[in-house]
Amino acid sequence: MDGEVRWRVFHESGIYLFDDSNAVFMDPVRVLNRWYQGFSVSPSTYYSRFLKSPTPNPTVINVSSGKRKRKPKEPPPLNERELVALRRHQEARPLLVAAHECLLKSTQLLNALKILKSEPTRLSTCLNGQRSFVDLQQVAPQLELTLSLRVGDAHALQPHNHSQDSPSAQCCEQKVFPAFNNLVANDTKYDAVAEILNNRYILPRESCFYMSDLGQIRNLIPAHADSGFNLIIVDPPWENASAHQKSRYPTLPNRYFLSLPIKQLTHSEGALVALWVTNREKLRCFVENELFPAWGVSYAANFYWLKVKENGSWICDLDLFHHRPYECLILGYSPGKVNNTDNQSKFEPVNNDRVIMSIPGDYSRKPPIADLLLEYLPGIKPPRCIELFAREVMAGCVAWGNEPLYFQDPKYFVKK
Ligand code: SAM
Image (cartoon, rainbow, N blue to C red; front, side):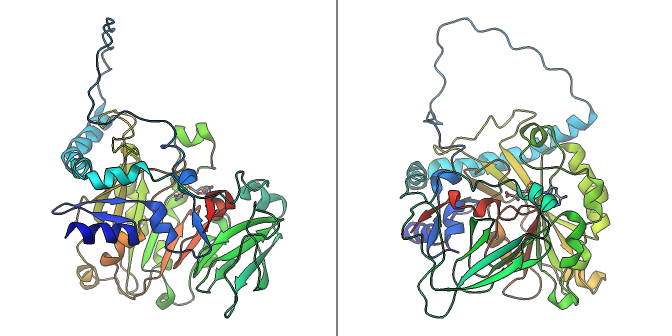
């Protein structure tokens, strides 16, 4: 692809393609901003974790301070599971290194990363002052939500005239819905604003969300498989020390995920299932041997999300055993109604081992990968997409979880 075209594609889509490579670079802020008119996602808030302080250039080699360094302690020998994990890492390593080299060679892209966080005035500097949605659902399950939608030729939803701090809706139709256990849809082509207890949340065009606990997920099963989904993205709250320590969200033991109704959510012509996993070998075994079989999903491919800083370096050493700078997205096919081998063979073979590079956002926030998967989706177009355990609402997709409005807070947006 011609360099100029590649650059234009990046500006328009947020995706930078490298020649002859399985790798892509993504600017999630650009990807998300394609869905909003009156607001745009704030780069400095999105990237706050990795754009904090200047980091040394990745090509600069550590200069010795002259002090005598202590010899590092010998690590204990690896157990059997750790050895399997190490093998997986060694298989992935050349691929990750090659992808990273593509990024480091692209001066134009590296220069663009340096200015990612520059932005206009933010809508709000603090989060809506309410309790977490998880608490709120328990103490006020009947709570209502007001949805302000732009109708007809009315102007786009505008920020407040008298207050610079929060977005509000003008010239619009207002609808009231139960906030929990209910499908709330912005089926217009414009941004909408949802209000709960005087706190506002910005919704992208053509999006919907269902805020509930896992116990109510079956309410999303369509009456007919023809209205099912052909892209199912799942980012489960896996139990791990890190999530617990930071207590950002509640986690669940693995057995709870076995009963996710993946089959029933699948479109009659099948679905691509994209599952985010951590690098724990025990979890990988669980997915391969128990979870995918319980869902009736056949393995298709493995993609890597490689996390980099604004200067292009990995976020941590590639070979750190317990903290890798990458996570995996496991892809599989759910066969839909026609559960026979013929149907399986109709699914697109997925390019294995694709590498998606980006600067990470908030803790556990995943890049918006739906566009990169479109070519592999079976069945209908435009695709019908659902994200399970979502914390943000995406255009053209149903977001389900106990806090799908988390990143829709005005804190994460700027005025256009
Ligand atoms: N994909 C998200 C993102 O990119 O920001 C991160 C999802 S995070 C790994 C898992 C989510 O599952 C959290 O928002 C958590 O609150 C939610 N969750 C935990 N327990 C749940 C339950 N019982 N029912 C519904 N959602 C739950």
